[in-house]
Amino acid sequence: MTDLQTIEEMLEKCLPAASEGYGLLSEAMRYSVLGGGKRLRAIMLIESFRLFSDDRELEKYTAHPFACAIECIHGYSLVHDDLPAMDNDEFRRGALTTHKRYGHAMGILTGDALLNYSMELITRAGEELEKNKPDYYMDNMRNFMHAARVLFTNAGAFGMIGGQVLDVEGFGDERVPDREMLATLCELKTSKLFEAALCCGAILAGADESAVSLLGDIGRLMGLAFQIRDDVLDVTASFEELGKDIGSDEKNNKATFVSLFGLDAAKERIGELYGEMKSKLEVLPGDKTAFENLFDKLFMI
Ligand code: GRG
Image (cartoon, protein in one colour):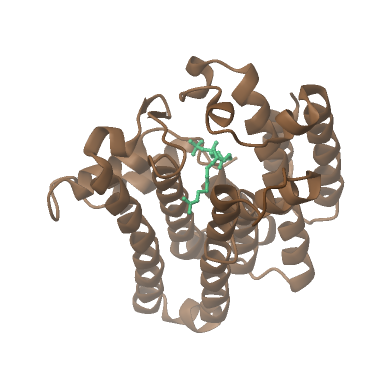
């Protein structure tokens, strides 16, 4: 499996130095991205690339900057999600949330800067590819552009941000969301970045359309299971285990899989989704051990 230390080093190197730029912005960007995190999306993106290609040069020039970019996007989404206007959380990854540490305005600006930075990383990677590997550039630019489009669409208004809108604003009436509505919300808010990670890795490696589509399905199931797991942990885990306050959903009066269907049904649903993911994984080529281990670690609860 892609080791965590390699990803940490990549992130450490790609972010601006704390002393660069204006005020405390670069420092706050580093604080928000480098302060822990499981790096699931970066790992998934690189492992997905490796299912279809063993070209480590191409991986370095394409999958690595995309992996850093997706962690910047994920980091920004967490910083904004923690703001007083959203979940109003004080702790994340065992430390103060960005706005608690740097102030509300800086929380907003740090999230904005990270989202922009993700685009900068990807466009810069395209230029590096052209400069250093012109033959690769000619062969891979179409895939590179396709992956960039998938990443930003999934993160955007019709993807993760759309899901956050449903979460914050509800479904337009007073109804308590039912299972289907809750699933739609999660498939946008949480699954879309997982889907992007898996699809981008595969696209960059030159996988065919049917494999990319299957990976998109796996990402959707993963996001759903991950969100239900998050709902379960919000009532069963401790602050020490999660690195953030527990009972956050109840505090914010949020309907979750646990509040609507109970703990046992939520755990059962995770088990069903885990089974579905594993059977879809079997159809894909390459060594899938990294994914099997990841699924076991996350979803055998
Ligand atoms: C603000 C536009 C905008 C979107 C926010 C990601 C998100 C959308 C909200 C987070 C809400 C939340 C806690 C969802 C549960 C699933 C989830 C994304 C948890 C955090 O991801 P991890 O566990 O985080 O991968 P680490 O810290 O490991 O990187």
